[in-house]
Figure 1 (tube, rainbow, N blue to C red):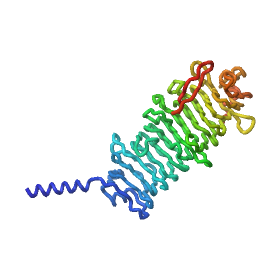
Figure 2 (cartoon, helix red, strand yellow):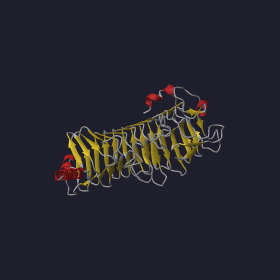
Figure 3 (cartoon, helix red, strand yellow):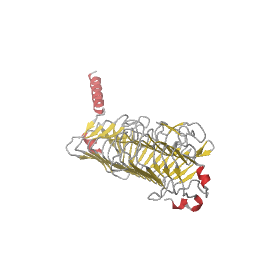
Figure 4 (cartoon, rainbow, N blue to C red):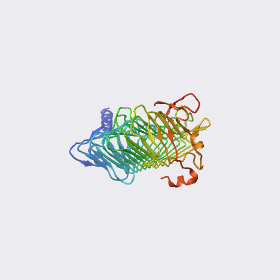
Length: 434
């Protein structure tokens, strides 16, 4: 009888030691690997070959560094969170960070303000995303996929401040948008050469890149990305940049391919400086309802700001080409610095083509563009695809001459709000582009 009681006691004691423990590094300036943490707290991290399992919440203190510098798989238990106040570096050839059970995701990562984060060559999946509160953040050559809400509910990479670097990644098929920032966050990130596909899988009315205000003197740069929509996600747009709080929009959107979303690019609110240049913006018509979206480029502001400079864009087969609303200003080509050379083709709905819809009282310079691709058009033919003062005298005039056309070789030389888009000779209709 005593032997049975003793064996039971030993079993219970062993189970008690096996219970996962949360762990905080000692804040003494240590530079630790995951193996070092496993040694210090074997109930927090266990090791089997190159597989490491995190069983408790892990906090990296302000003065400490956790370094992953060898190829491994980090399996994280359900609902567990990694919080970083210090330094977190991932730098080997291949690391996988994933859920211990893919059906029960972990909570993700929270990078506190003043932490230093550098993540390279990692696959991050089946977690709750990256909440980036720090100014010092870079992620390069990583894959982020199948992540859900957790540490962030706004985007897989949710930014808060500064000039984060997001380069050469694949960000695909996540529940939330790929990259986002808060309305008042002043983020001027460098978002370069990423493949962004099929995000916002809950089909919420949010774009794949969803940015708020920027720093005043440093531009938000969205450059050379491929942003592909999922036709089944009919509410999901491409890129949105919004200024609802009286902050700044200083941005460059250049050389991206944006295809198959509800809309291509929208900028909401006044801008300080904005260039939309050399983008391919095609087939952003997945919802199929011109009352609810479908613009290649949409600008909408109730407060007059600077002109958006647009040149060298190829805008094809959206429900609308470019739409301007309220007090939005754009320069599509002039006789000075803006070369124009935007190409338009088959942007239409209801049996009509709308290359440019100026639903504002403001005049628009739009010289040196090809308004009907692969056709040497007459002025009358160009006039027919532009809606402006000729169609409604309360609207601003679009100056579109001189214009260029596809047969002249331009293709080789090219480098949640309501809006109103009234089709010609019809009652204005409401459209929601963001």
